[in-house]
Length: 62
Image: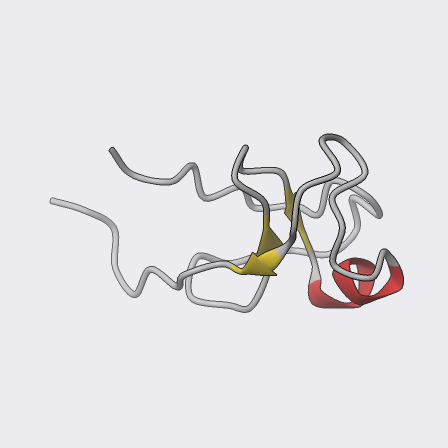
């Protein structure tokens, strides 16, 4: 099962998050830009889980 690659930060909604760019994600796939993740001390405000670097996806699946 593939991760949902959300294209906007859930906190600031302004940061574009391309599939090949950096982002932070929790185990429930809540997704944030790096500055917002750092501002929240890498703790998801939705579930309280750890925010970790999201894997990058270089190309869309075939």
